[in-house]
Image 1 (cartoon, rainbow, N blue to C red):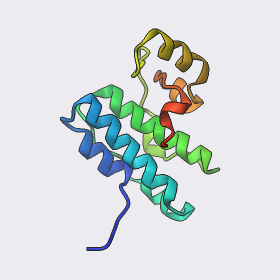
Image 2: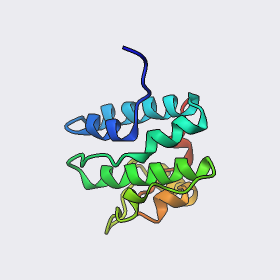
Image 3: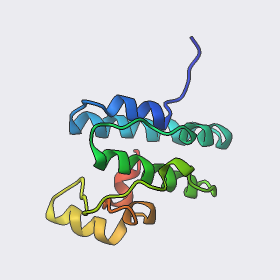
Length: 125
């Protein structure tokens, strides 16, 4: 079987039932693969709507991530994510320092949906 990069839709499936630590490892893996792919492949990695993860916060996170990555590549966000947003703020990294950092540095795609995660948390070493 030939290599296929992890899509955002497949990432959503993998997040179902996973604990927080595993979810962040999966997000890091997705971001790593995304970074290595050419632009045309990257676009296809974001296009299919992920299924519900069982946690609205993570469903919204995936929409924000799709918009953020598409914008970084100079493209518009996939339409499936438009309606996804939270009614209350979510700080995935909920320490005092992380909250302050996220308030200052969260990318627009995340802020407008109520997800406060600093941009550096989305970088893969």
